[in-house]
Length: 243
Ligand code: 5GP
Ligand code: ZN
Image 1 (tube, rainbow, N blue to C red):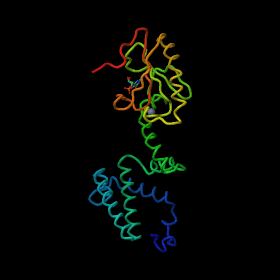
Image 2 (cartoon, protein in one colour):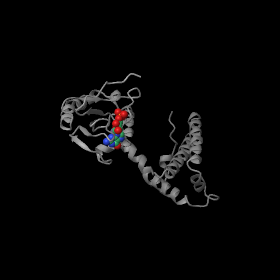
Image 3 (tube, rainbow, N blue to C red):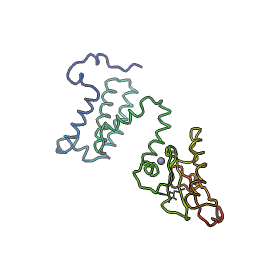
């Protein structure tokens, strides 16, 4: 099916000479200006006053109309419904305090990555954005650092359960031991290889326990892989208490 509108590329006039970016920016600016207009006379003002529900409802309707237009193989309506969707999407972004730049940035990040690879990495990237341990690595949240190299970061647990309680984490976001792959072998090896030295240097000279809580059954609370080094001078007791 070729849905191109005959003759549209030949159309002339100011708007057709504007780049896609210019048109989107202009529309965003118009939406922002109309935001404070009288809802009685301005559709945009009324729409934004009821955001986000009013806009979400329209996006649902416009999507359905776009589907119908494609099914009917009607290029004029496809363009029209797509334009309506873009308009409402820009309104939604505005109501969320965002702009089309946020979408452009997201698209730019995906540039050059295959669709499947992008989908796979998106989860990890979004996870990492709100991840407390990633923020500790970046220095956005303070921590008592005990060791750091290019791959791992070790710091004192905020709620120590024994005199020595250190967390060792990969600097790169890995959600849990159930998410590791081939590329994680080196960093996992490094965590194990540094554990004894970290324990000894921090007050556990005669052994320690290394725990990596994993997933729901392991009762992992923070979704960034971490090894607990737990020790001190006294034995720790049974590894896991029975119920
Ligand atoms: P999990 O139950 O996921 O194996 O353990 C998470 C550990 O992270 C807990 O022992 C908790 O005390 C520690 N923790 C959570 N938030 C912070 C924080 O902001 N700073 C530090 N230093 N430790 C934290
Ligand atoms: Zn993380």
